[in-house]
Amino acid sequence: MTDDLEPWFPIRTERILLREFRENDLCDVHTYAAQAEVCRFMDWGPNTEGETPAFMAFKLAEQARWPRDEVTLAVEHLADGRVIGSVRLAVGDRPNLTGDFGYTFNSAYWRRGLATEAARALIAAGFGPLGLHRLWAECDVDNRGSWGVMEKLGMRREAMFRQGRLIKGVWRDRYPYALLADEWISPG
Ligand SMILES: CC(C)(COP(=O)(O)OP(=O)(O)OC[C@H]1O[C@@H](n2cnc3c(N)ncnc32)[C@H](O)[C@@H]1OP(=O)(O)O)[C@@H](O)C(=O)NCCC(=O)NCCS
Image (tube, rainbow, N blue to C red; front, side, top):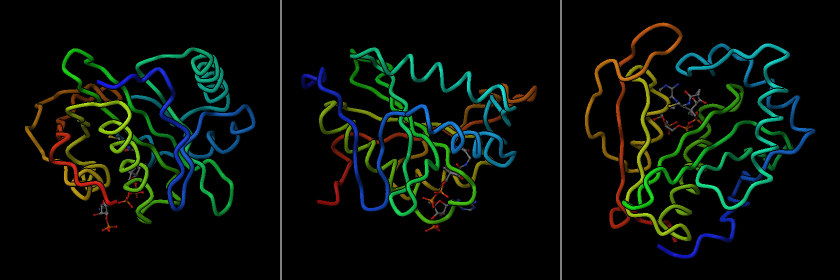
């Protein structure tokens, strides 16, 4: 594993900037965190007016610490300067060089390939500067958008976890997806 004491972010891609949160992102973050369709498969939300500032305070405090194994980043849409979602990459199993990631986007920006673009950048960071061997993510079996992103990225569905997660009081089945470093074909 390479020396990852240097932050591997911010990352700029064609249409987005993955960067740390700023205090004045609150309004944009609340917009997506309060959307019922965004929170449908999440164990949080839709956020109330009070919940998003608490989340932001937590994230801003977390950002003051470095190094850390779990990083959540705001997704800034370059065309309009708005924060349209967030992504997370965690090195959850350091001895086995294994990390996991996730993503959440404002529904007004769905189906434009933006989650795929963001996740591709996370994978490049995981297998590049972070030196990971394996990356995984999991989603609800009914979260077509989420597993659509993972399949588009060439990840492999490795199982189905029966009732793997309690989401809003209901036990939900989950698909784990994974990708190995030597399976990753970086687009240049
Ligand atoms: C999951 C999510 C991040 C996908 O974001 P997105 O930017 O719309 O995804 P993309 O545009 O990159 O889609 C990639 C592929 O996934 C599939 N897909 C995405 N959304 C879909 C949907 N609603 N229905 C069917 N297929 C979908 C498509 O195959 C798509 O490729 P295509 O548009 O070329 O056909 C977004 O729906 C979201 O934020 N959902 C709420 C939060 C969430 O559930 N996060 C994941 C938790 S595990």
